[in-house]
Length: 357
Image (cartoon, rainbow, N blue to C red):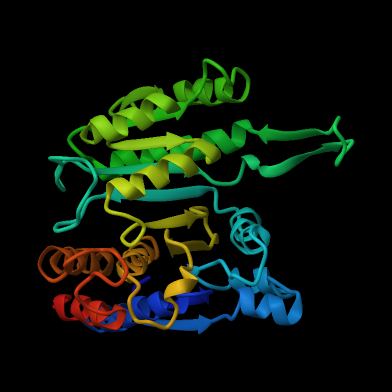
């Protein structure tokens, strides 16, 4: 993308989302000068306040407008005045599904100076990636009620898996494992084939078929309950994990805690296909109780910006941010917890900017 302008749609969202987004944009402004690329950010007011005023989550034509961008940056979703699930389904899931962002990419990496609840473990021990299928499974919303509100009520929620959905996610994960090229060079499928004998059998068979095209990549398999155990006991055993939407949702939150909490965890919702637009976000919620206090940790949002640049044609800028963040967490911050960092939100952003050079 050299010589072109990187077009970003920013959705700061709710609560502390605008505060962490501002720090990510501050870092973007600085790194763009150092790396010599142009960018344009359009800020969209989609979120809880807009919904309460208009009853609208994504305005008419909003998705088509996003398709004209190179990337989306999402601050946080969740408003105390809006019932849980409305914004999450109407914005976050709607964007993932309708923009076909079928890869959820979650690095689980312990940064220098960041505490992990795992005794005796350090950055060399916690450095793996989870590739989560992002558009199928129980999140499709297939199901319904019978005799709702009565003692005989029945609720059915169906998981949906397709060969296409499994294969494109698994193939992307193999390509990513090859590109990551760690000494392990191992892709681990996480599922529950001993109980979920239809959908997860499809995942298993697809994994075996695709693996034939990647003889240089080692393969492994874990039941999801065993994976949760091994992530805690031996996180250093993992390189790349590929898994279903539901299980990926669960194990990436566990991964977030292993890497020091949601204040540092960032992720990407990728549509890797030509012409696709991807979305990048910190994993923490909107944390409304901290709004406006300059105490929320912006590191996750800054990490999300590094991922955005890495996957949008500016990998050197992304790596420069990664190095600056590692310097700041390792030498400048007391903690990653809100209000305990030793610096305010804006000051942490300033420290990362200073470390870029």
